[in-house]
Image (cartoon, rainbow, N blue to C red; front, top):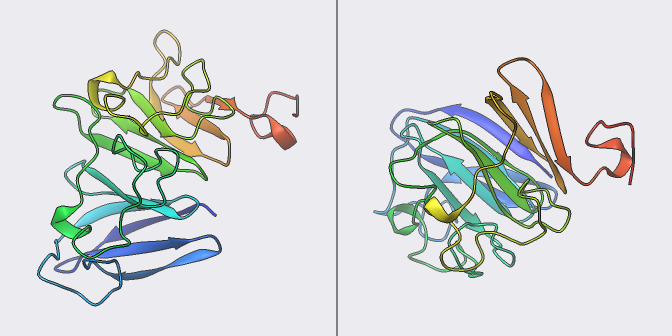
Length: 201
C-alpha cells in the first residue's frame, strides 16, 4: 500500500511505521517502537512515503532516510540489510541516502518495491526493485542493493530533451512523472493499463 503524508511538525519528529495494510505514526525511536530515546531528531517539514514493508522520509533539508525491508535494495544503502529491526539503527544512526555530490531532494515517492526522487538539479533518480524496468534505466537490474550503485553512480532517468519533472509517483511496478509542461510520462509494467499507453500487460 502506498502512503504519502505531508507533515508540518514543531518540536517533535514523527515517523510512519509501514506495514502491508497501512501504517501508524509514532515518535522517532531506536527501534521505531514509538517509545522515544535520546536519538530523537526534530524535522520541521517533511514528506513520508511508504512501500511494501519499507518507508522513506524526506526532511526539510532535502535529505532522505529509509528503513524496513531491504531484500532488493529498497533502502538504497548499497546492501540488502533490513533496518529498523534492532536498537541503535534509527534516528541519527540511520544514514541518509546518497544521490550524488552536493545533491538534495525536492520530491520523494515510494512504490511497492522501488522509490524515486526529483533532485535539486531536476534530475530524476530511482532505486530498488526493477523487475519490470520501473527504474526507467533501460534494463531490469536492481539498484541500491550493491555497493557503488548509489550517489553519482546512480544514473538519472532520461525523460527527453527539455523535459523537466515537476512531480513523481511510483506504483507496484511502474512510475510516472508530471512534467513542468503539464504532461505525464510513465514507464514499467503496463498491467491493467497502469502506464496509460492503451496497451495492458
